[in-house]
Image (tube, rainbow, N blue to C red; front, top):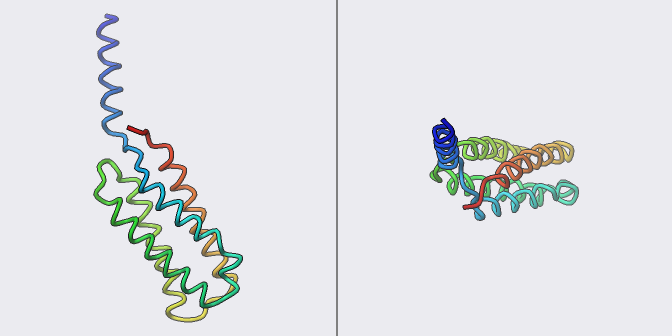
Length: 130
């Protein structure tokens, strides 16, 4: 009976290890880069040109991250989070392409993006290293 329990526990552990996504240092670095950009809102939002450039850069980084993560094995959660991030950064860039959003809009949007990126960083950082 003990051998059967050990076998079942071993199979469950091996299966869960095979299902869990692996830590990817490139993915993590891209997320940290985006966080660094998003945390610059106090400086950026005071200048419309800088805000527009930041919105474009964040959107390009998010698209690049999506392209990087979408075919990594067992990475569905990250891909879903990145897809949502692409939507957020796309809205941010579009606001500057279509008009002149307020400084408060810029600050708030960067806060939201930053919070999402922090969550992604926390989740990605918890992936097992193999």
